[in-house]
Length: 311
Image (cartoon, rainbow, N blue to C red; front, side, top):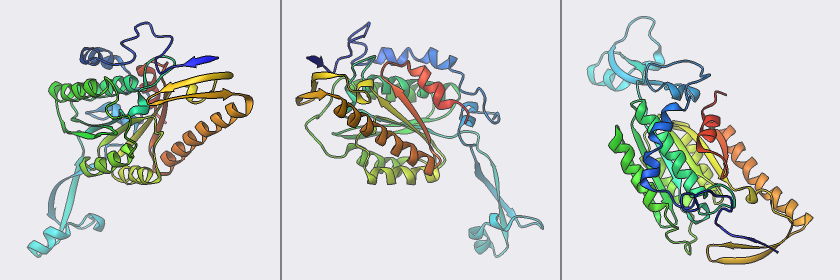
């Protein structure tokens, strides 16, 4: 009989792969500089070049001026026109920066791995790399950390201090599950909060295993994608896709059960995983979101390189 525990069995440093430290996340400042996020992009922008791997930054309002012959009527400023009695046109300029927003799932299922590092640790390292990258490019960085006990939001700010406050929150909440006995939809509530707090035009990274994404949560993601660029990073452990052969004991948070990994069980197990992944990919395609998968035995930088690869 095979005993499968939550602790990764191939870890070189057992403690480092089950709980991150603030120092671990701070040290990712340097590796973040070497990630070639702007390679193979559609076009270079004067600031935040790595974002051109996703959607263009778009345009932001600059000023209004009196209407001139040839102006696009879709750009008329009706508010100023009504106030002044003269037709005015809105002028726009290319956005020079856009907020980067991280939404990191630290609910109880994320504290698991049989290979590599816990999904929770991988999520914090990915978030740290993205945050440092945004900092190096002069962009504001905000965040959200959520679990069964609720979510914490961080207003987008610029600079090292903005990154450090998020990293501190990640390191603290990734030490252990806070309330594993609670079963309310953490992701649904978090995505609702995200829609309330995130600024239109932001670049949002949702880092999770998406195990508990409901129809309501999917709807929230769709609304978010209508006004922001969204990247979904789905994290998984190999055993969540491929069940080992034979009888094995699965030990997790508040559960200890026996599973028979016969041919039928393994097929059903794989089909459930593929269905969940396919549904998330379909959701992403339908709302022009980027979908990226990552595994607990992969290096975070490798996952990010897939995320930023030009489509």
